Image (cartoon, rainbow, N blue to C red):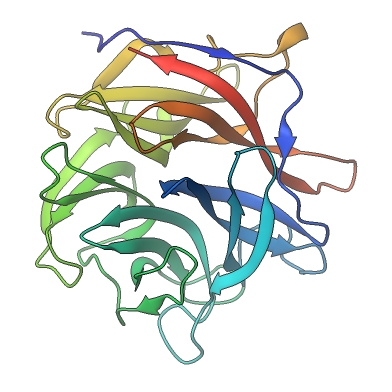
Length: 300
């Protein structure tokens, strides 16, 4: 069974590259509030011994009125020494709900990337911060948890958080709440690794015309398949099936067949329209990378 058919097109072949002269920008989450775009992104300093991995990193803020000219506003979230996330904060997921910006993130236990990963939550009344962490991990239960992708339900009555859970195998799970401190209701996996599929990674989620769109990077055992970004859809936000077509890269490419990049995200405005998309792309021979943004059309 296939989900709703979608179509998209790029309005530009040369992307807007997010400015960050001394570090690499890997994963991001974007919200649109009162005419301004706010992008939360994990930044790895070029001087870090862990580059290109997002260990010992922080979450930074970039803003734009147009979506083309972005300004770096500095770091808004980092690990707290002596706590569960002292190893760094990464993979942000942001949503505006009930008068606050909810900024979810992956917390690293150790600066070298080892140890447990959990999902934390920080709140702010202003999208530029300051953000206040709630303390311990937001989601409990077995396994490592990261890659949070929150959405507000179509009824505007709850936050739905999609995230990756690793318990020997990988899955994309769902948890929901109406309040920052919970209680959280955990609904289990909505996308699971199976067959030739080795690993999954949630990169973004958006509600478009009442349908939840979930972007998942999938890595396969078969060398020929490599890594693909698969789009899933669910009208109830729970029972996901692959979109038609399912593979994003098979539809949206740039001239000469170059791959777009990894860690796909969508920029959705206040009206619910997708205005652009973002991917991570290596920029030079030194392995430096950043978010590359393309104006786009997207519709069911």
